[in-house]
Image 1 (cartoon, rainbow, N blue to C red):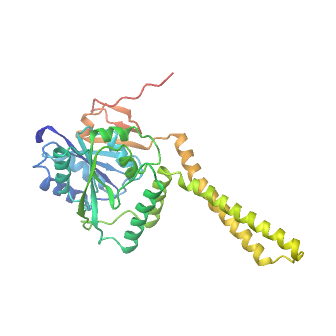
Image 2: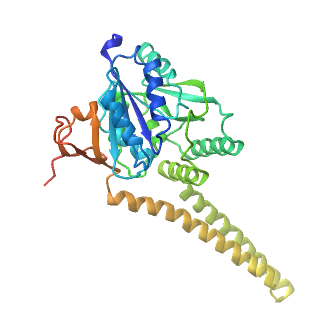
Image 3: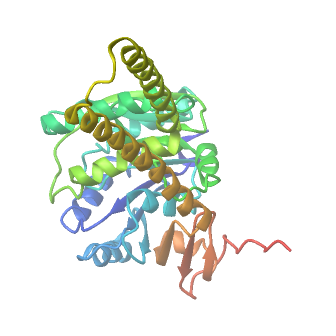
Length: 350
């Protein structure tokens, strides 16, 4: 397919990123527009409290050589929901999620596209080979997460040191749209469809401006969501732990019976009793906690609430969408009256 005939869409979630948006667009124009005449940038404002949405709107109004769109969510739903909001409505041959802080180098997009077009690879992802900009704790915990996730998940494997920066062919995007879970771990969802894939190593630079919105507590919960969403092994593990403790308790009981028969009744010790009670109590509380994690997610899934609500869509994307309230596979959009034509509300089943 000739270069001018395919369309590439960059999906860029933003949350309080007023310091980086204009730098990002300037860089995209300098490095990609000349090579990709049908390039489109879709920003997803994830409930920012600063001027991020205003800046994007100004760019939409002033940009002539680059198509820019804005999906503005009604509140902060999280990065995974923000990416889902764009994936549900973009209509391109290839989609590339990336960060606005330029830690995902835009020039690497051309390498992704070359592999996609020339080698026929459907899924091209960036591998961070140099994470010296991250703290030692973050590097260690990140490596530990990938190791644990891949050991616990038998069906979906995600490469180590791979973020959301990747190119996906439209057939992968269409498949991901049909995955309707509310607790969305996008790295796992991107890997779930399969298809041919290839990694491209790159060095991850520092942010161009602003500060990260992730802290260790958010990262911990994010990792927990990923493991629970793609593995039932934590539930199975506690079955084995329970069986093992039951076996030890049976052996100990037999030992007490034999000792009593041959040595008589001895005065029980307070310390040993407390150790056993506290240990078994801790095991029970941990196992209840693991059950609670799964039950909580089941509760969220059966409610089937929309993953996101988009209060408005502006720019090139809005021109292709029907006016009024629209429903995608995972959320709700409100499109201004002056725009028209592509999503429609699904018919209710009798």
